[in-house]
Amino acid sequence: MLLAVLIANSEGNILIERFNGVPAEERLHWRSFLVKLGADNLEGVKNEELLVANHKSVYVVYTVLGDVSIFVVGKDEYDELALAEAIFVITSAMKDVCGKPPSERLFLDKYGKICLCLDEIVWKGLLENTDKERIKRLVRMKPPTEF
Picture 1 (cartoon, one colour):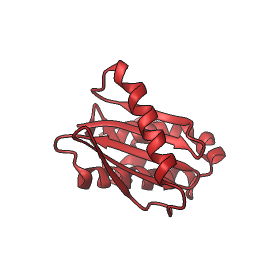
Picture 2 (cartoon, rainbow, N blue to C red):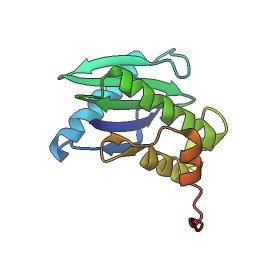
Picture 3 (cartoon, one colour):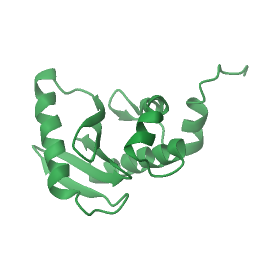
């Protein structure tokens, strides 16, 4: 299960978070852990260079894209390889929406569309859509046409 997708700015402020199957009382722990993990390890990392951590039998894959950090947390069948695929889909969708690796301002300008993309990529803790064209089609924000 994908336990969490968290996106933070370079100062460690959380811009988007999605938790699945994580009790409310544990979410604060995960927020602080992931922000500290990013602060300790993401300095000087290139765009889309993946880093991997393990915590309490849970995998964490994280990276930087422009001015934002992206963290994906999973367990069971979502090991580091599956999380790497998930983070690749998320970063490519964000680059498509923003047109380039986003600054924090551009990210916030495109916030709604990025949230829609995340909702199409991860659904109830499962990696739902990985095809870039399908995600684009699903987040067009137009009514569906007749089949």
